[in-house]
Image (cartoon, rainbow, N blue to C red; front, side):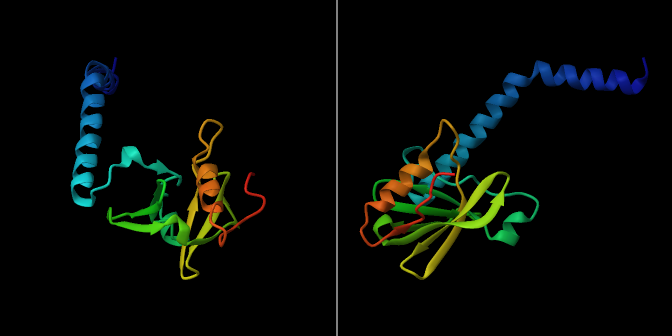
Amino acid sequence: MTFKNILLFLLFSLLIYNIKRIIFYIRNYNEIKEIHFKKRTKLDLTKLTKISNGRFVFGLAEYLRFKSEFYYDKEYLYVINTKNQVVKHKISEITEVSKTSIIINDRRVWKIIINEKIIYKLTNNDTLSNNNFNYFLDKVNENINSTIDSNWLW
């Protein structure tokens, strides 16, 4: 065996040996991050429903302006930007939710207009087992003054 193969074997063995510690560290890091976010914003993300697909990588977010993650509850739409600042909008203030012509990774880009002034764009996180965005559309549709794209599914 060459030195390179021995080194790879040792690194792989260390990884396997410490996999539980690595997983624990990642979980702990995420919990601490969530606790700090909750202290700063007074929001518990576990009680909110996520409707966005998340932030894009490789500069695509800058081009398409997807810099936020979207959550909602019974009354509000929460927009959390990359600096973890929270903007809160009443769902009753949403005037339009419609599809755009853009598709990224087989996900349709949606446009949310609030009070005909504020426009957000997002890709939803709907899968076969997750209908959060459809529930959000139903919640918005409860408002008489809102307009939703008539072909919301696929």
